[in-house]
Length: 173
Image 1 (cartoon, one colour):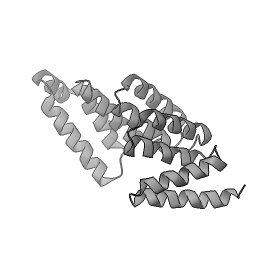
Image 2 (spheres, rainbow, N blue to C red; image 1 turned 180 degrees about the vertical axis):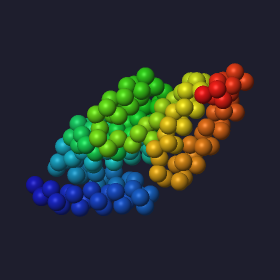
Image 3 (cartoon, rainbow, N blue to C red; image 1 turned 120 degrees about the horizontal axis):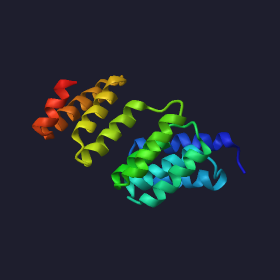
């Protein structure tokens, strides 16, 4: 078995391949890494991302995200990626529980992103006031100007969907 540092370098190559849009070669490299180091959490995260985003194999994506969180419990990426996947496949109750757990237990959780995702779910469920408040909370702690602009656009879109009574409630706050 080759040294872990060799596979860490291979992981960096796989990450670059994904960035370049070469998911097929990245997938092969990640599978090779995991054949030697099945507890390499970051490789599981990236493989989960490929299964979810490129192959639409949600169950395999979930499987790898869960392994990534198990083997790298302080690595934030699989927690957020798993959230995106759950929401995209409509498993809102699980996503909400996962977000609650993550915010409570992960030191470096990106609260702005999680509030944005809570807002997205509330909007999908036609709970426009709640969505507005989640987007507002997401914007409050954000640092990225593009993210802040997106939250403003989300709040405007949701406000446009609100009934007159919901809009009045916002003004009374």
